[in-house]
Amino acid sequence: MRIDVLTLFPALIDAFAETSIVGRACAADLVSIVPTDIRDFTYDNHRSVDDKPFGGGPGMVMSCGPVFEAFEHVVGWNPSDSAGDAGECKLDAGSELIMLTPQGETFDQSLAKELAQRQRLILLCGHYEGFDERIRDGLSPREISIGDYVLTGGELAAMVLMDAVIRMLPGVLGNEMSADDESFSSGLLEYPQYTRPREFRGHSVPEVLLSGDHAKILEWRRAKSLERTKKRRPDLLKD
Ligand code: ADE
Image (tube, rainbow, N blue to C red; front, side):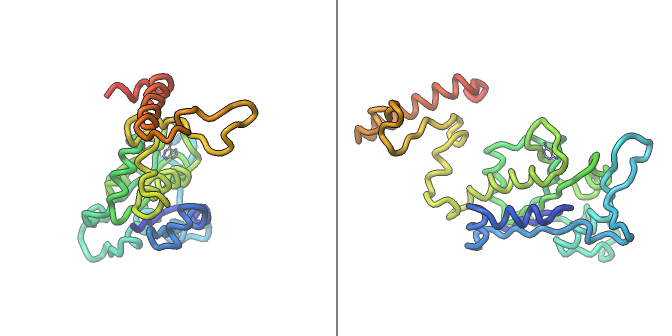
C-alpha cells in the first residue's frame, strides 16, 4: 500500500513513518508513507496556504491553490491537459482521496478494514478554520473524522487512521491472528489478558488460563468479552 499525506507538517509524518510497528512495516516495504508539503505549492514570499474568510468571521481558511496543486502533483495530473478542474481527475479504483475533518463520517474499525483493501490512500490534512469549500467541490474527497472533538489540524487524525489501517495489512503484525482477536473485530471488547508472573502482589492469574483446557479458555474469554462489553459499551451489543 502507498499512503500520500498532503500536509503542512511533513516532519510529523516522517517521524510517524520511522517509529515502532509502522516504522518496521515501512522498512519492510509493506507500506510506503509519502508526505507532501502543501507549502511547496505556494508562490508568495510568505508561502501562504490560508487567507481570511469572505464574509468575515474568525480564523483563516485553507486556500484552494496550494491544495489543488499538491493533489495534482501526487497523482501526476496536469490541469492544462483537460478543460475541467482536478475533480475530473478520476483516481483509479484502488485509490481513495480522504480529507481529515471533524465534519466527516466517524472512523471506526470497519472503516479501517475497508481502507486496508486499497492500493493507495491520499490523505489531506487541514489546519485553521477549515477548507475553502471549492476544495470539497473540486476534489470530492471522502471526509473522515476520528471523533467529536476538534484538533488543531488533520495530522494527528491522519496518523490515527494510518495506524489502524497499516496494522491490518498482511505481514505487519507478527502474529497474523492478533488483529482479528481483539476489541471491535468481533464486535465485542477484548477479554482480560495476563502474563507472567502468575502471582503479583497477592493477585493471581485466573485458574482457567493455567488449565491447558483450550475449550474452557475460549468459553471463559467469550464470557468475559461479553461481560465487559455489556458494562462498558452496551451500544455495541445492539446489533
Ligand atoms: N481535524 C480537526 N479535528 C479533526 C477530527 N476530529 N477528525 C479528523 N480531522 C480533524
